[in-house]
Image 1: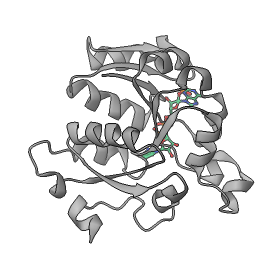
Image 2 (image 1 turned 45 degrees about the vertical axis):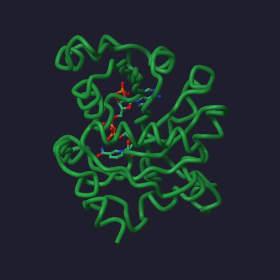
Image 3 (image 1 turned 90 degrees about the vertical axis):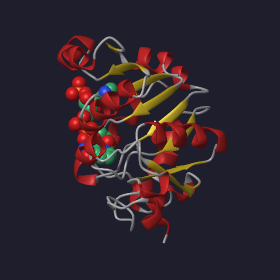
Length: 204
Ligand SMILES: NC(=O)c1ccc[n+]([C@@H]2O[C@H](COP(=O)([O-])OP(=O)(O)OC[C@H]3O[C@@H](n4cnc5c(N)ncnc54)[C@H](OP(=O)(O)O)[C@@H]3O)[C@@H](O)[C@H]2O)c1
């Protein structure tokens, strides 16, 4: 499987390392251009290359999006049509500006992203784990139930299974919280947000 990554910061850069270590080919992108990612791809090695967001979207069977939420309208909807897209983004009004539909609770942030990415198979995941924990807490040898949990929400059951397998391959434990509407359960302010627990503990 090939991974595209849009956003090469704390979360995108950390996920890229884990995906390469798990044996994936990775195309990673940011807003400033592939040349600015030369140090990161040098560190990632031969199975990663830097590109543009459009080409990362074309390249990936699965595409992780980890940019500030306010920038979601720039995501390449045409190229992401039909792709499994992991939305790792969170809404922080002091960073992203106020978005009425989110302030009122009318929609989840992932619903907004999915509306923009019509035809993409959007799964919210990787948004409740601090990047330093993502870097260090994976344990591939541990039973799934005893691993650090990564929550997933989405409307496409097969896409969620693909993302859940990916989470297991990098040493974490997936836990399904429901639909895109129900992804409010893993947004900032929700009980599980940033919760540093195992799958077993999260279930109880
Ligand atoms: N930090 C965490 O521990 C953490 C944990 C879970 C979820 N998140 C969420 O994940 C998202 C990213 O957080 P982060 O901490 O990784 O941010 P970050 O370190 O500031 O990195 C953001 C990345 O997004 C890129 N970017 C910005 N606008 C873009 C655009 N329009 N197109 C393509 N790339 C763009 C930036 O590239 P340039 O530098 O070239 O602009 C940069 O590589 C946020 O929504 C955040 O809430 C963060």
